[in-house]
Length: 510
Image 1 (cartoon, rainbow, N blue to C red):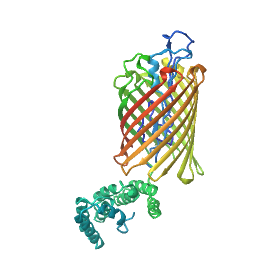
Image 2: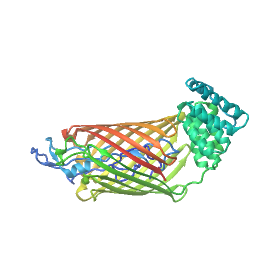
Image 3: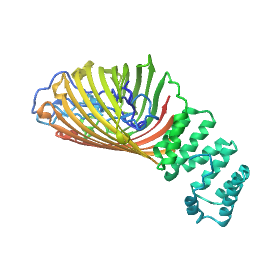
Image 4: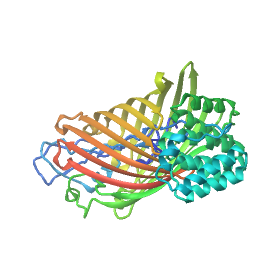
């Protein structure tokens, strides 16, 4: 399993028999040989399809497990080599869906308080001032009572919650202090201050791992250099955490897809409808053998409520070796995977992956990757066997509450059925905005251009836009809801389609 994870936690749809992982492969389907050209519109033709490569898009090294959480793109199909349009088979359509601040002193924020006090009652303002006086006299219990009363008297804004948190902290009431500072962090201008104080609470609870996470967030989001320096100093003082021998990622979700087969009309494949509800799950884990070696494994399933013919199940396993050289971190990995479609064997794939990454100026990070896959198509899907070369380059940056990722991906496939072979170029953009300590929004967009080796099959251009909202339940658990819209423009009319897919999942770092 490669060291670079999973978009998003993904929030994301991955129609693959493996977890959202950087070594995931495209799946293709067809019969072993190219069909003959025919003028009979009723002749059965093959529908070419590809599984989208699940991209790695870790949004934060701190919150990302060593298994990729990636968002896939569909590998769009095409019809037979003949110039006329033919009626694809249901089996072929089934294959197409595989395509795819500190506590050293009390900080009273006068400007913020004044703004909220203007709309507060005289009673609330007097209670707040009484709390300040009590705090200065080190009567923290009285200060807390006064600040709480001010809040109940409709004094709004982060200042009163900040002072509640400080007073509660001095009294050792850490649960109340945590609640208050989480409320402070909901105001973007004070988020870093809230994160820093949440880190101090974690230290009092002897939870250095959680403290590290909060201080890191404070350092990333702080616009004030003094606060950033405080957070970085705290991080440097923390003990180095012991390496967890076993790490993992798991997700379970459900949703609705209005175009499971990725075609223009359900009549094309002779089914009653294209839409269906689904359930999906993924699990991936990584275990160290030695300082530089790790073993990786994972499982994935996708189950449709009615369209059982598109159900998928798969597993993968492998090993990787890490090489550290100067400012570069490199990984060499091998992976073996097995996929089924509707309970029948689909393919066996062996993959060699080479990846390297490094930090760049201005908080950018660069990652480059090459993959070679040797594929055996199984049973009636022998035509998907062959080889595939993939190369990609990705740059990520995080500034405050914003994170941006840019990626280019090239794929060249040479399959037993030459009509499935293609060259694809894809550009992707990921943009994430942390709204507060618990909520974040993510936008992703991909553009892909494919040229098939057989000229009669022409080209395809696919665009997908996705929007996800995430709610953190804890440091390791979160809920993600994602909507995606796709539009495919193909030289084959029946493969000009639109697609809407929405899903919700609960995800965890294990």
